[in-house]
Image 1 (cartoon, rainbow, N blue to C red):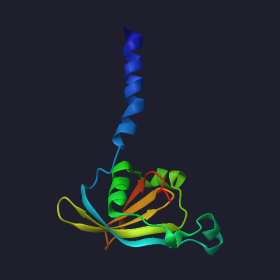
Image 2: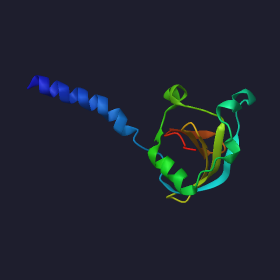
Image 3: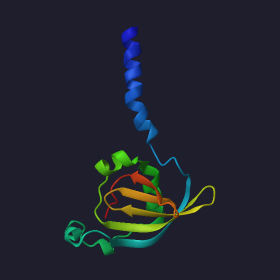
Image 4: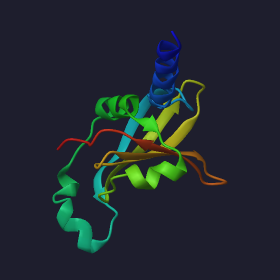
Length: 132
């Protein structure tokens, strides 16, 4: 009985953090609008790793799906997990409460939502790579 209880507690401790980061929770995204297709914002020497960035496209629907599959990543873990290629898409999103926020997605699966322009508060996201 005690062993079963210990296994249950350990399982909850291991699974709970994964459940807690299952999706974007801070905001409820209602719609997404794309404003720039792939543009390169990285170092010139890194451009070789993301060829044809300017020919990549991402639809509003695919961007919204990406946000649905992504999860928030706190600052201390973000840099270790982020894959930044320099090839990004930019746009705006509308939240369920009517706010309009800027976003940026890197094809490597890293995303940012600017929550406040005055204090540069950013929501950092990790999600799947954006396919070609």
